[in-house]
Length: 297
Image (cartoon, rainbow, N blue to C red; front, side, top):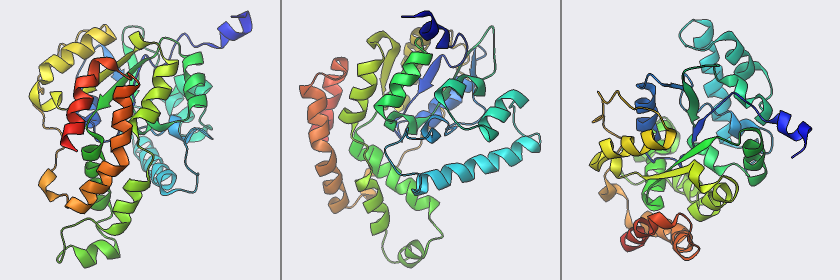
């Protein structure tokens, strides 16, 4: 590595990044991280910073995701000016007013000498390989945390969340007293999203070293949250001393509410992807988990 290349690497900035996927308990995890004195997270979950870097996502800037993200940031800007956030002026300037870039990414985090800083950004796991490579170049010691959940259930849960957010739409209003099934528009949106685990996990694992990536099983949040925090504490090399809210409930939903037609469509979407996770040895320590997913399909 040349001198010019090495000087581009940041000596400060994020030490960890939780990349999702969606509906894998990242809100619960964000809350647990906020409780720890030795950890400094961003004031908000899902900063939508890396995903807003031009060309970072495999979707067009005209898509509804970016409109939603920009509206979220506008609302947060108002909170900042009202003094209702813990953002410093330096971080706010970068976050609200400067064009997002990998190089500037470090500047949205406070410079702490005695804490490790990072963020929880589920949609980030879908950013493109070129952006991941640049991220690793600037922050080579960054640790990546990935949640694993049977993708048919995470997509089903995502569909229900989208439906709740669109509760005032005409289609929802027409259906809510007649049919408890999800609107066709919501199903189509989720089915068309490129949420295939093998595709996205392979990108991250081909760039970040294995010892800098930790994948956890979503079911541990309900079944054994203490063990999960022990694993994360060891991975991040910090003491998770505050476990006062360990039993905080994770967002769940009743699988029985999914109509069979939609479930079958989700199975068709994800079965080959899960099979590839096993066949290609992606996260081999979790092959038994992936096999159990197939048995649910």
